[in-house]
Image (cartoon, rainbow, N blue to C red; front, side, top):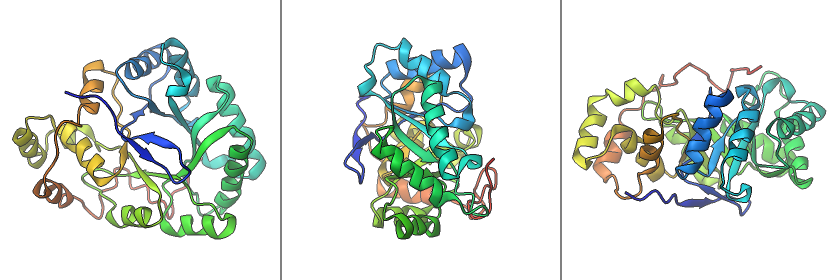
Length: 280
């Protein structure tokens, strides 16, 4: 099996691997060991956040591995409570101090928090932090088209990436289409949904048997063929390798259509609707 991960060109000219590694809940020495393992197994995109409280763990994993820093793409995210311009600037700096990094390759606004209506101010802070060299690529998470439109209207800058909840039970077809039309790369959080729900799903099991692959490989290949960057998480080296061994086969149109038919209007895992959800 081939573990070479293709790259996608972003609207700012930078490149991003088509599969990354999620670090949510990976903390302390065990977390650093798991992340180091992922890097050594071929992952180059690492996804963290201020609110994951593990930016230091990610930094430690980077220091432990022999892979050069300039071959890694490290992501973190701005929490909702720090959306004012000065708070956002300070938090970006604090994120860098926590990880002991000179820059983040990617920095995202974690949620729009529309009731506060400060996300444009936060976005301006990211724009400026990029100019100062603290960030290479700027983007957002969980922004709806109306939020993205407002960013463009008020700053003239659209995100390179929008990380959204995306999995077979909630495929975000309309949102993905809007991204494609506006040259924004879709990144999928919780790409495998609740793992047991996915792994035990008979429809996905049938497709996996057809291709002689695991269910997780089928779902991650589906993300890839949608053009979305998935960021699965696993602390197990065997599973880490499994999750990036998806580039030696293809799903056919029937497979893609079958998985598309699994989406549900109420498919969000925790009911976190960006139109109303407020992150602290």
